Length: 201
Image (cartoon, rainbow, N blue to C red; front, top):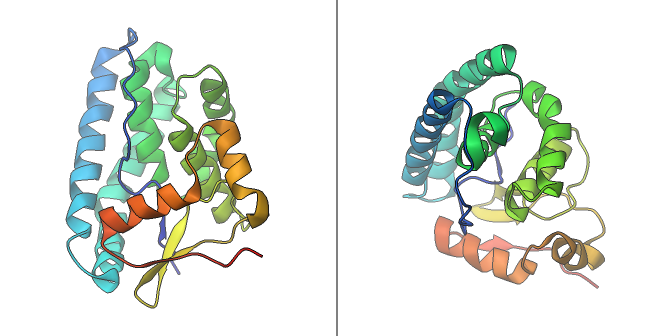
């Protein structure tokens, strides 16, 4: 069964990066075009209730995401991980979004080390990094650590399993993320759904 975890679903709070030179501008432009389709289609999914959004995402997974996953696999086989040297920071950001929606974890696992390195080198936003790490952990059956992942349940967005809720905001602050209350307000505004958070004692 496909589990639709709403994590990094739509781009939020874009950071403005100075454009880095890309050694492969053609590949960068292709990735940006793939990202645009991904995001345009996902925006359409926010037009209805939780059931509509879940069904919309299911269709996207079988169409847009499957097609993009296949193309990303070809890109990785030919070029390796599309880092900033190859596709610039805009291209890398497109890769991050597309990786969030790949239909298997194969490419995510291949990308973990270069993405961690890119974050340490300040080539990625904290939100992009948190989305990636949390999605990968959830797919591995582990608790997420930054609280990026939510799933639909009973018509609401519900926080996915999260490690050590007492210290969640401390972990978020450490990598440059806003408090969860701000993240929750953003989700409400985008998805137009009630957001349910577990009570922290």
